[in-house]
Amino acid sequence: MKSAKPQVNHSQHGESQRALSPLQSTLSPAASPSQAYETYIDNGLICLKHKIRNIEKKKLKLEDYKDRLKNGEQLNPDQLEAVEKYEEVLHNLEFAKDLQKTFSALSQDLLKAQKKAQRREHMLKLEAEKK
Image (cartoon, rainbow, N blue to C red; front, side, top):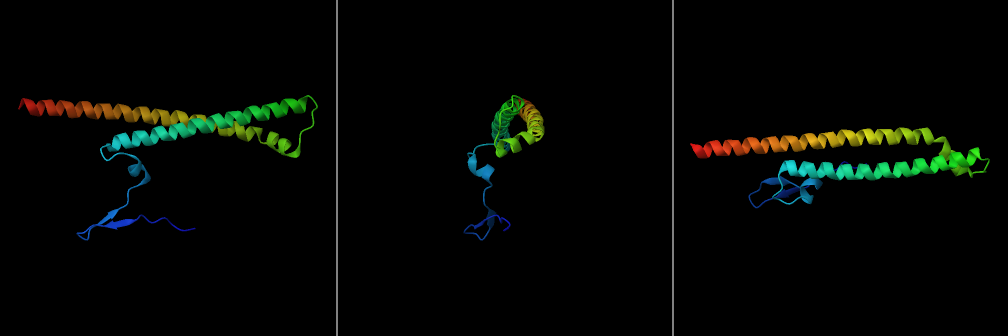
């Protein structure tokens, strides 16, 4: 496996600059670092939400297989193998939901910190104008 090396661009003055990260390249140059991380976290939460939805669908399908087994219906080998993984699916679903809660809390903490920093910056600006 190759290790990924950051690309280095050389300016006309011989200085080297690192290539933009995927996060930096998706955001406008005017975006602040806090806005960048907020966008990144929001995108992660969306992906996690979709993952939870998919795991819940899988759980429902496995519950249907279990009910069909209880009613004496024959299932094919793949379905039987899937039923055996029911507990694993439940564990994954619980883990994903816990992760979603944690990321949501982190996102809220980030927003609070941003607002607090903006208020502090505004107050310092007002004080500087008074002088």
